[in-house]
Image (cartoon, rainbow, N blue to C red; front, side, top):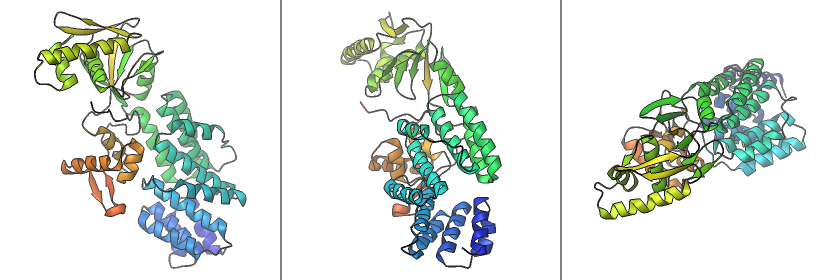
Length: 406
């Protein structure tokens, strides 16, 4: 490897893509193409970066398996940054195996963290925790240690362990400062802001106020009966009852929780649960049936009692009932939450992250585009969707699963 290639590689490792391009911008040999691709990725031109990396992979000879594997890892990182979550993970896994076989432990570890970040983004927390628990970041470079701690913090946030998340972010900040890469430091600071951003809303006794993630953690560890509209469960510190597949029951539970300690008129319950304009006798009969089912489901936490005007929720051991709602509640809030991270998403990536079909997500995106809430660029498979970040909206926390239709 000649001196210009070495100098360009060092510049890229330090987060200086322009310094790297000054040395290799006019070269078309395989190492230079690879470094130019990484530089363009750092500058944000992901399409050009992908083209250059694929050109470099083709230009490397059959005996240069490590160089080709490094190009694959770089392309996988671009795919993750551009939210191409359908990019084949087996290809990255094979590249990581090649790097490990040839002793390139640094790039092999980087490839593994790309796999982990993808799994974290699509919500496979159990699998991510199992992999991360086996990793020792001590021998890694400062940049890789920062990436490790960002993953640990991401897991802790999603598990509602704010103390562990804060500690991981402190370690990530220290490692990023040692690495001296401005983009990495900015990523750590952006993650730290999530702990200071409202993650949910508390509805209690007619009042509505935002909650930080730490406050959500405290609430869910208390004896309070929480009607959780983020995950469609009713819970206290010891018991969790899922109503995600029973939308009518959850609608009734939420209505009763919002009105607690008061009652809810029968007509209001009919409107909330069945979307009916008037509570005729057939709807009242159906309401009694559904409330009976709700009473049976919630028997460990609360009772549903009839009043003169309607029904009320009576907790068994708790002194209070509250409703935990999403920070922003509107139609298709889940799609908007992912798009609000400022990155560009494909419809296939959104479908994978949301656990929905691509056609369903595409219809949602089209309706949001008509309303002016999202915008797209590109065509066909290159089409991407994005929206400006919503101030005060935590985008990666407490994202709910879609509520099934009745």
